[in-house]
Amino acid sequence: MTARALVGLLPSGVTARGEVWYDRRNLLAGKERDWRAVRGREIGLLLQDPFTMLNPVLRCGRIVEESLPDGRRRSRTDRRAEVGRRLGEVGIDAATAAGRYPFQLSGGMRQRVAIAAALAREPRILIADEPSTALDVTTQHEILMLLQRVQEARGMGLILITHDLRVAFSICDRVYVLYAGSVVETAPAVELEAEPLHPYSQGLLLSEPPADRRVRELVAIPGSVATADEVAGSCTFAPRCRWVQGVCREQAPLLREVGRGRQSACVRLHEIRGEMSSLRREAQEESAPAVEHPSSGALIDVREATKVFGRGRGSVAALDGVSLSVREHEAVGLVGESGSGKSTLARILVGLEHATDGEILIDGLDARDWTKLDAKERRRLRGVVQIVFQDPYSSLNPMRSVGWTLREAIATHRPNATAVDAEVRELLLSVGLASEHAHRKPVALSGGERQRVAIARALAARPQLLICDEPVSALDMSVQAQILNLFATLRRERGLAYLFITHDLSTVRQVAERVYVMHRGRIVESGPVEEVLTRPRDPYTIKLLDSVPRSERDRTVEERQSVEAAIPDPGSTPPGP
Image 1 (cartoon, rainbow, N blue to C red):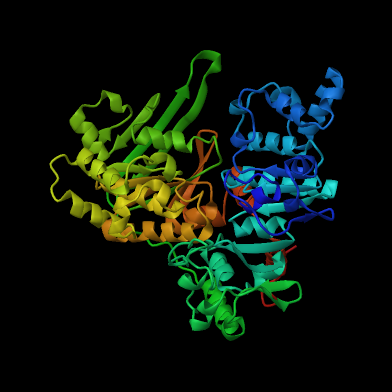
Image 2: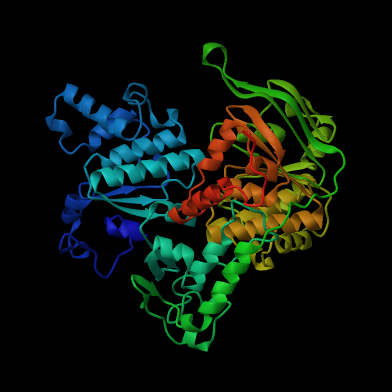
């Protein structure tokens, strides 16, 4: 909403008050014609989903051409040459991409085209709103490095909106932390990473799954974000803060200087700063080994599975000889970038696609093609395996209440079930939601609450195994920690097994004991999580690990550790000639 206010694109019925100064002008005091002179030409906007920016009926070259400031005055040859130069700046071969439509490109390529279009008018400032959130780790790294390179080469200002602190620390000079409509802290990125000076900033930092070790339980901020009206006249974070006292609710605290270039809106900072530091040290020192849960037979056994889409020269092999297994009560990770075949395998396992060749056994039953099974066999398989998708809003009926959705799921899997309303309340309680949520529709829920409902619906079938297809990638860090802790709790209480599909290596380290690394339809490496992520062998796994966003502080620590590891121990025996 802030980004839209900065470029005059607020939704109908929403207005902005205050001041937005740009080039000695208050933009909020101008009219629409004044915005048109600034929007795109002076301040560019890059949205999270390139599909919302790119016209689906125009070829990519035409999209960039339309954005050129003087495109109509150029000859056709000049326009093509300029489009090629613009696409080349963002790492795209114009010969292959300019003639294609957006739907024919990968997510990373579409985002590059969107960047080229946003930069075509030579803006002095680019606002990038979650430009890498929906991308896999390698593509995310490429897009972030591209933005940083273009920003430095052009001397352009960049406002990066993100919920991933690793991304912010890896590319930003300064960070503003927003909560419930208010700025609660501002600081240089390096200093904020070293010591956050607001309880909410600290909560975000501690909620982030560590990439280098496993912890017993992720630190999650309790509750959910309040609306601005609910916390008006007090500290916006008070309902969720462990250090809240009466003074925090007396009035809305203002940002105040707490150091050079640093501001915080916490009125009790001087009292709790030491305790905050102690909590961070404890969290940084905590580690826990992966716990092996007792397991017996394999619930899922995939052997040399292939999946080919299309025929003849136009065919594409999404899976190419994939072998994978998940035992009872076991958590297995499946990682890889977009297009590697992870979701295709998941869809085959729940009967939404069928394998072209190979063998797929689910609880001992041949499940290569669900359409060849009778109703009793399909019902048995659905009682073994269920799936939780990435976007809960798309997987929930927006016209139906939560209670209706859960009652339908119960009736589908167990037509003779009794006391259905009581079971709905039990399902909601099991995923950490109050029974009152049964009366709400998805639009009235937060992203984390919608994902909890999606999990509850999957649990209605009482499955032995959940396939989790990127279930937390679209959630902010604090909500992500809550959902990951929920998965761990459900596993302990219900003895569930998981196939956890993700592109986030820090996430898979927290939830799985074994991991498979997938690349271009093949399994390129597998083994215990700690071994694969600590001592990777395949070049692609190494590339994935190298693509995890790192701040300058992290790079300095890694370089120092590398140097120290190379220095021989004074007490050791010197190497021979």
